[in-house]
Length: 140
Image 1 (cartoon, rainbow, N blue to C red):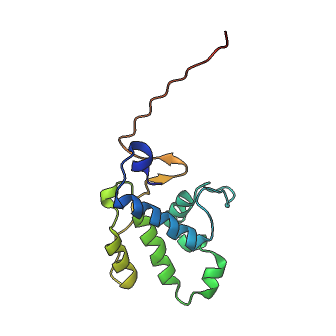
Image 2: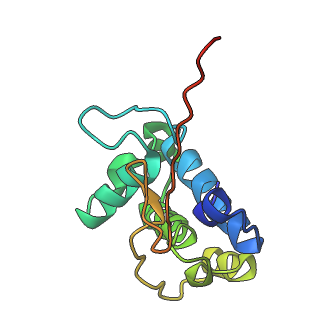
Image 3: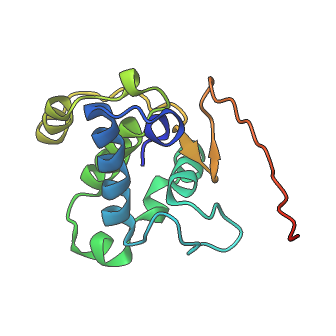
């Protein structure tokens, strides 16, 4: 779920792009987003993928079966980069789907992804204001 939808209830085509980015990471890794498959790593796929991207080891997240069946790992690396672009913090920074399709179908240079909107289980949304109230109910 895109953070802007989870926080503010705002939904747009850019929310779908965020979801597509998650789906693409799940396909590439063979893992679900919210299950800790990696010891001593982020419990979330987004955080795990981002950590490996910044450490310049992104292919480590790719499922072994996909690695074995793929003739060109540079295409897999491109898919990881596209998925991270779909997970940008601000919806207006995310590409639209026609741009994503163009990225898959060409060899144009891709922009460098910024830190994802949601990673390591925390929102990194600038305008998030969390208010909490607790009501204790007592029996008569």
